[in-house]
Length: 57
Image (cartoon, rainbow, N blue to C red; front, top):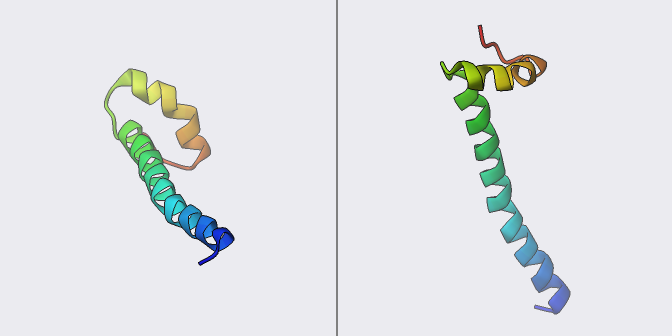
């Protein structure tokens, strides 16, 4: 395996877990604030949730 092949292969291996982690973190933030009963969290995320068509009330 030459150097160019090795670097592109390791980049692809690194990108998948980072993308999965980012997706999981984003979904957790949306759903944790979306179903939170805290007024502060609700108000902080209110406009973003409505912009993404996520019902909150």
